[in-house]
Length: 467
Image 1 (cartoon, rainbow, N blue to C red):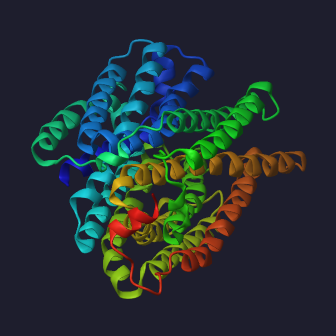
Image 2 (cartoon, helix red, strand yellow):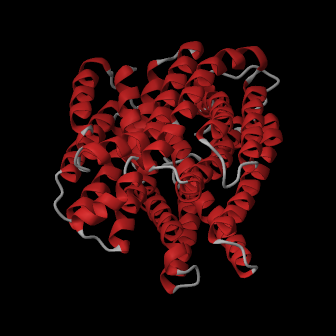
């Protein structure tokens, strides 16, 4: 469990450890704006595009095997990124890092599902997995800021190398192999190709749309490719005897509810995380390090409430626990909206603690709802769907809330507002969009995650229903 949690922490840390180091990297490598964007985007593109394929390969060929391969690829590409002397090498290394993370990430949650067959033990293990991911996300900016200000920027990647080597050594001795039954090991090549193509295309469009223009030929082409590939994927999955994703999974209310809840949370929370970082630095005047430090108490609140959520879930049920977490997030967002140009570290702290607490309460039972209602043979794919839902919804949230923010910002500037006030007006409107969506999630999760009236059947009957 320790090894899997450590690997999860590394991959989530790399999602945003680079953000505060971007100006330093640009000066060091003499990069253009486009090259700079692709240092961040290349990792997200391959991660989101290949997660589903990684989950299916783990189920078919062994979760431990894919986990070890992904961890090795991630560690070696981190070494390459840390030693990069030009933009091309760094972008290439980040691309390979994303591939490693795509193989590694779904395998971690699938290993937990296969290893912990007792529901209580599995719930606790998923709680630790969630806390590891949260700390990785929250400590990314702080780690990046500390390293960039005190050491060479390359160490934001090189720190992964000793951690990766230690994790590999521990995993080799402690992680046992598991895979789908032999009947389910047939690879759905058509599903693999079309799913990867659809995810690559939609991720590319969401990343590049703002800069290239939503009506530009390449963005429209990317959306068309994504739509066609998605239709083709569902058509293939519906007809294939051994599909990559058994579409009957989505008939399980708790599974669909958990995935949808993940998307609601990611759409609002990840977008707000992104734009709040800009607000803290450009409007209030925090340094990158100080901005990162503000998110650390949020991570601790998330960890504390995530630990408590397992007990709460057993007392009041997953649906009420997740709804309570969404309610706390709604309150935290409203508190955040009340802040303006003169906010301080102390005044911002309660908002982020309430937000972190809400995320902690809802994430563990939400993940449980997905993994407990998935046949063990599909654990890798279910984990990949859950993670992909977060990545795509997070990018979608940044895109849509960013468009709302910029629209309001532009109208405020035309009306004579200062640049700072116009950004603040747009930021607040964006916060209200996120708040409204999360508030809707309170009712949605209560309805969708309610337990069945009859006891949940064993995994074998569920697997039988899905074949």
